[in-house]
Image (tube, rainbow, N blue to C red; front, side, top):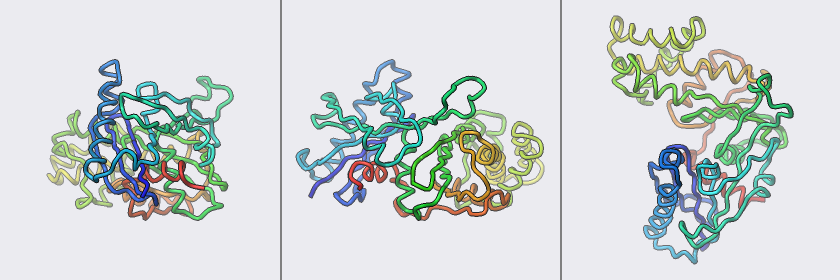
Length: 331
């Protein structure tokens, strides 16, 4: 049997996954090393080591020889100037075949003596880049392979906006031909982290994010509506009021904050020039809970799109590896 190794390296973490010849993920290695460490250190030695150790560990754990590896492919920030091999972004619109054609195979002896295929990211097509067009411009590295995996689970010949929440929320527009035509990025995840860990609100939530077990639709929608009326800065302070005078539960305040932060993401989905969508565009929500449920509840409550659906995919945590496999080995 042939095996594949998929490397997904982001800002803060690197994951190395082992796949079989049908694209099923068999094992995963995770390291808390990402391109932020390259920025801090001024070199990519730690990232090299993390990838090398990841490959060595998953091969050893599964009694697999290097000669059994058909291909190693890498995506995400690993293709940035702070990664292992820099690739220029492809310019949208970009489909699966375009991504495959843009792959660069490189030998990195300090990592492994097998060539690594690097998959490029995507940037929006903007002819006149200036302050006047800055909101039309966006870039992604890594979410393009996730989008390919999501699209493999959806009916073809349909335009979509894919919501891929994480440290940053990526809003990815896809046309009827399955090509990515643009994206927009928000910093919702980082904002949630900052508010939760590094502000006066930290005590109200015990520095904890919402656990899906404690997800509260009513509080999420209250936070959303409050931010819609008075803005993010005012609304999040109200979490302290909730905690002090109404309900001491940290999770109540955390749910409220989640809704308040996501309000600006909904504005971006509706109004970003980088997407240019309308009410008839089908919206598909992916990602981990409780973010997926929060987006679904807010979008259905707001009623700004005719069709909003969530991705039901058992391998959702492995989207990047599955998408990369489809790019490299798909038709």
